[in-house]
Length: 130
Image (tube, rainbow, N blue to C red; front, side, top):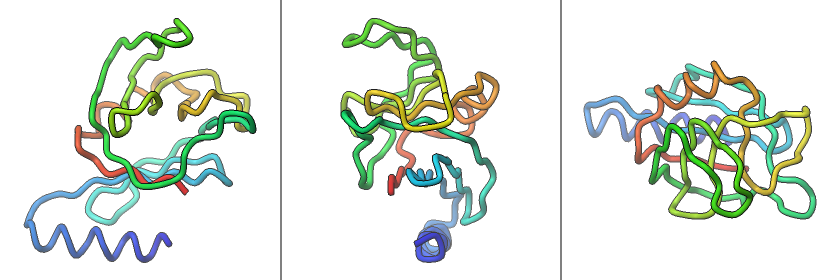
């Protein structure tokens, strides 16, 4: 799948003549890969949705970015929040025990890495969760 994704990004980047960014989230490995122009430029460990509230698989886009987001459902701070397709989940800084444990969100367990990812990822970036 990664090779297909890389070829797809290369094709679109060549057509558009500009930088293309995308995020690939590997649920089995609990890793996030940020691609720019078909090259991996950032990798981080994650904690995704647990057994009872799994992280949805599929293709999404970052539709909202909020530096100091607070969950309206759980009333907890979610710094560096990036919402996916206007849904009730996204990517943000949060506790990472080393296994799937969230309520569906994608937690980046390092504040510096969450901050860097937030800064490197423009709104509209494609996110593939598999």
